[in-house]
Length: 170
Image (tube, one colour):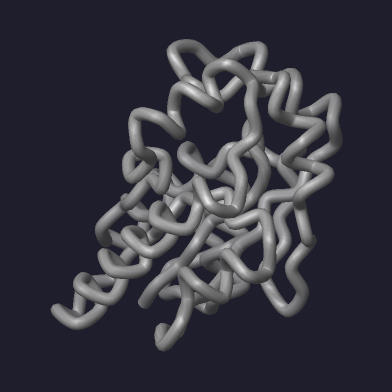
């Protein structure tokens, strides 16, 4: 099982992804961990990444997904995956379930204002929303819900055992 939790910066990808991976007892990958130092510095300065910046990053993540999938490991990946072509690259040859965390600009900015020690800040929200190509045929979750509620809903919609019980998302 391969699940990608996607959305713009501040949508809660890492928080939801970690909770979901723990709930499903599988590997968690954060796409941010695969960025080069140069990409991190650009984002820290509020400079949006280009497709050329992203290409090697996406290829590295895809290679890791293929490697883990070939060993039979289930994975939850937290990744912005803003464009359809990025999602195509990440999921090429894989059975990847996509969960899209959708929120308003106000929700995203509130989340970012509360976040500490992260290289991507509020200044990236407008460019990420402009770049975002909302996916179709995916699980869409509203970030107004709590991360635990989102995880429980994902599990219920994917028909996971134990979904729908209040302790299942804890």
